[in-house]
Image 1: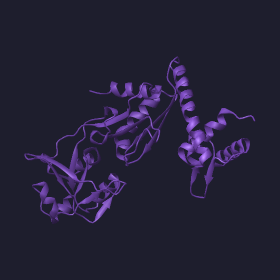
Image 2: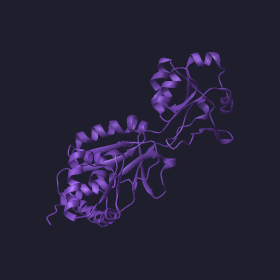
Image 3: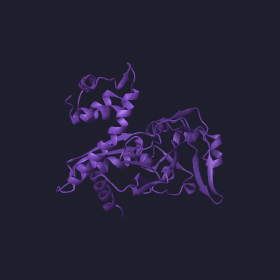
Image 4: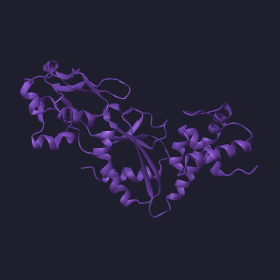
Length: 296
């Protein structure tokens, strides 16, 4: 029974993603080619490895057992190859990062563009996701989040400038509603609310003489995307709680007005975080060194 390592690499990719399409994207193959490779492997092993429906792919009991035994060996092979990679003039491989959509657009993309020009043999795969994901379980090399949401067992380094929050509204909206002088007065305003993909609402945080103050915004528009939130505010739907980098140009042009500035101090930068472990992939090490060069 002749089975190549590539057959098992295909199996491991499908098992990890639970998707022929995602495995194909990772391996540079079509979903039909992936499906054909899995069928051939099952025929050679004379056992079914996956349960397939039109909507899902899942491991059979035998497939799960095979995956659990093969995955550590596959990880060891990647470690060995990465050690050999250290003898090259420039590192190569793939760096997988999970990032919120906004942080990806405002902070990560300029860095990735420059990084890949310096290291053309490194592929950077960025998944934009506002969920709080387990980067170890979902097999990312690193993630990006605000410092308050990074797990304590992770190693984190700052990426980008300090985070500045702005409360904003259009001049037209403020012509119909009184300018708030205190965060608690926002209960009298229509606000454009943001919620996490899980459905959990985001409370607006302020800092004053009495310390931290949380305000639950009032309004009948709730969005799970901060860019869409900005668009709604620009349309005069209400007050928004947004990042300064999002609204800077609109503040300068006069399309938006900043509110309650004295209640909104700068926050720590976004953090690039990764699991503390003895082995670190060369692409991740190169990216960390690249980021540290740009820290003030």
